[in-house]
Length: 148
Image 1 (cartoon, rainbow, N blue to C red):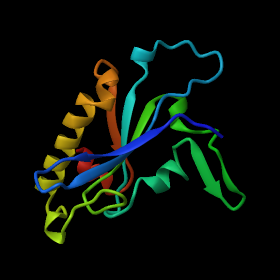
Image 2: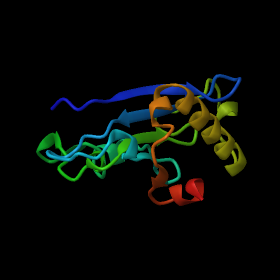
Image 3: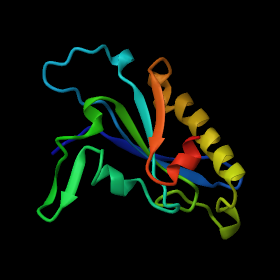
């Protein structure tokens, strides 16, 4: 069940606060011939607020599905159509972390500044290959506030 993937933390503030991401590259359907630069990058956020995107990667639109029968590949994964990056946002949610309670995100302004810092650093690093790809940010529930 080997699905290409990578994950990591991006430090977004001087206090060491970090945002976690889980990246799954596009896995085209058999016979698909779309040029890679035309495959979109989709950043997925979870609402809640306070819910990790890992649950969506494992039960909604990611490449895996975890159910009563255990772990299996998700035949409806959005990785068939896009490069997916699941981001635990804001800091303090899921694997996104801060060294102290004072580093937790406490306002929409802070959340948007942290997310902007994440995007800037992601596109300067692992995401550099997607700079010319179509780009979308989406999510569930309260994530609509973050994507607006």
